[in-house]
Image (cartoon, rainbow, N blue to C red; front, side, top):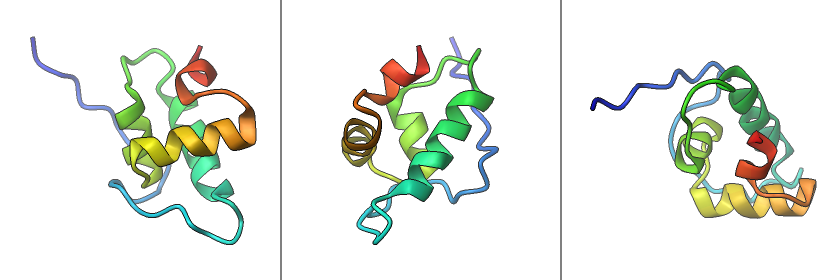
Length: 77
């Protein structure tokens, strides 16, 4: 079975980066949420979401827990 390529429509660069911004990562959070919304019916993983937001998966998880009191996958549901 071939893995389906998920399109990054968020406009953010794909790939991990450090989320230590003065705004607390709100740009990355908005990008991640936009990616999730754009791919609601696609089989996405936390790593896919993190890459679209330019974060490492652990940084994405931490960002969602801090700002949304849930994990990225809980947000997806």
